[in-house]
Amino acid sequence: MADLRINLAGIQSPNPFWLASAPPTNSGYQVQRAFEAGWGGAVWKTLGEPILNVSSRFAAVSFNGQRVAGFNNIELITDRPLEVNLKEIAETKKKFPNHTIIASLMVEPKQEKWHEIVKKVEAIGVDGLELNFGCPHGMAERGMGSASGQVPELVEKQTYWVKEVAKTPVIVKLTPNITDITVTAEAATRGGADAISMINTINSLAGVDIDTWNTIPHVAGKGAHGGYCGPAVKPIALNMVGECARNPHINVPISGIGGISSWRDTVEFLLMGATGVQVCTAAMHHGFRIVEDMIEGLNNYLDDKGIASVMDIVGKSVPKYSDWGNLDLNYKIVARINNDICINCNKCHIACEDTSHQCIDMLKAANGESILQVREEDCVGCNLCSIVCPVDGAIDMVELPNELPPMTWNERQAALGTMACDADIIKR
Image 1 (tube, helix red, strand yellow):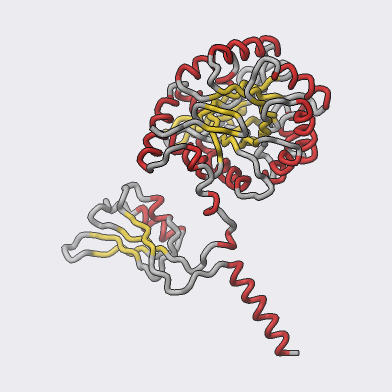
Image 2 (tube, one colour; image 1 turned 45 degrees about the vertical axis):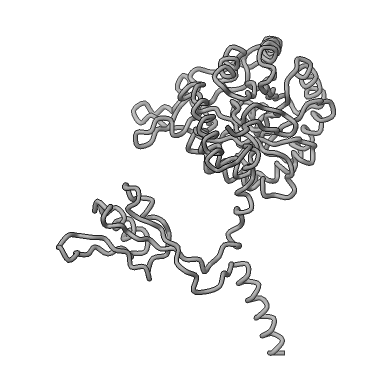
């Protein structure tokens, strides 16, 4: 069995699977149930001044029969007194001393407020702190959450205030509701953050009821934007994790969040630079015991690869992630249809004919049967046909030998610049 233990900025955890700060970590009862199921850690639902929540508060987006492809919420931070939460955190840590408990915190952007709550929380024995600069609704209107997280100067300043008194590692949770998340990640690093976590939820409206014209969800006929999460946001989260992991100015560990539902998702986030992951929507959809399959799958994956420790795969795909200008313009792949597997649904032909490069022909075989065939000289290797094909193995994307040496757009532009300079010299 591979070693699943992780070390994130000095925070030890028996495995990389943590519950994110959210409804599943609202109480000691829930977190203890999660630890019994096998979760390595939990980020306690955000602590601060207790608020009043609304009813209703959740909504989901389903797509083609898949329930909860995306999830939306307008719930805020804890609605329970700080003293009650602290008592339950202490009890839970005492009962599960080897599991990780992180306290998520959110207060007004005032130095004394941060100092006060940090001292109270650390006094009861948490393993680390997560500063919630990401919540996009409700708290943001009060000057907290993403309202702070969208301003690099505030991210840096508040992180610095926390580090002035914190004795445990500090993780800064970043909002995706920003043009470039690396800007605020760098600000957190300058402020002294020991790690960053991402992504928090994305501004969203789940839907509109076309019969009542109410938003989904609504509160007495009124709606507001909420935070979007679940499987649908995974590509966005992966990109942001990768962008921060490859940025030389952000040299701190990353806790990956966003649409993680399986061990496969976890491996992708680890390869893209996350040291561990946080899960919310999948646990809300399927319950805490999903972690059993996640642990078993990750163990089997590492064993099959001959990898001794999960820490050994962290960031292995980051060197492969670059800018468009560094991609080889002379690399060539084409589609090839396996007619012994193809069911002649013609979806590839329709997609290519209507929306791509018109390079799939409908032909007759010698026996009179209809077949599909790609004109490889016209195929640009866009992958669309293989994406829409409903049959695994019916279409392969095949790499062709390079007829020309590798060349990137950046190299091409540099060469053109040199040629232009030479031409200018000759002209003069």
